[in-house]
Image (spheres, rainbow, N blue to C red):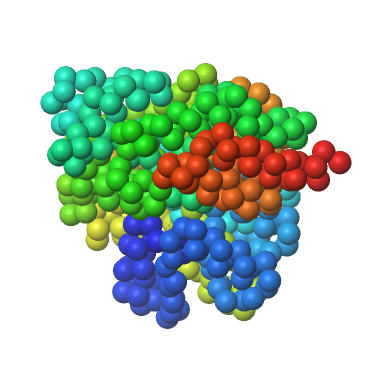
Length: 410
């Protein structure tokens, strides 16, 4: 599984709760996001059979289902009345289902993206954050709040290579600037003006007012930077909020404001993602694997996290019932409503200003995108490091996208 805080929590809780109740031992391998994707994709694609359960996301689930790599989970969920499949949020169910309408991964937590800001730093400068900021407003705030002497960045933005690292936030910026990876007829738009304008804006912003070491900063690094009070703003996953509001893990608990993802030409721009548990076809422990998945994505597990670790740390964003838990509403009051609304507003079929040939807000829902997005991200990360220009990065990206597009135009 990916090494995010929610996964580290379940690794701590499993032996004393799930294993004690079922007798099923769970061995966890926790990896950084890019490494996880490489290892799991390789294992599942080659039918290696190393994993009984793996965390995958909204990008992989429908593609891997089509390839016949995963067990469908609908029959398990439907037969398990205690599981309450109907309680799962529809955007999450849809994003993790195959063309046959069956569920191929069960959401552990769901997320959109939003802008987080340090209310104390804003107040000290007499600045007011609007509920729906524009990217230009964000850039202006970053310039005013950047304090290199105090070691506080104006904003934290991912710069780490990877289609799911730097290009998760950056593709949402491209969308709202009016760009897209491909138009509806599969013509690549990577070097087109809106894509270039958005990328230059992002690269300039992080170079001028972003965190130190931005080309190596992904979700985890920005979570640490912002959580230590070393950045005035951070645009990233809504799932980060639970850790930020946990005083034992964050120096900014109670000091963070949350607003919608910044926009330019679109009404909203938040992404849609779920980290979810999938069962590879190769597992020889399917029944035990489902018992673990149903426990890990069920209501009782959420209650366990709340009671043992703190209610703000629930792996939320996947069940409607979560948002009716009184303790969670109280603990997550600063971010729960906006998270749910952002998830509901995200539109994977129409996230920009023009029709798209494939679904996805922060990715293009085709198998080739993982390689394409990662290769272009390496060039963009090099631009953030000052080793190349955005124009060169995107010109190279356009050629790579053209190679992908040829297949689809046929």
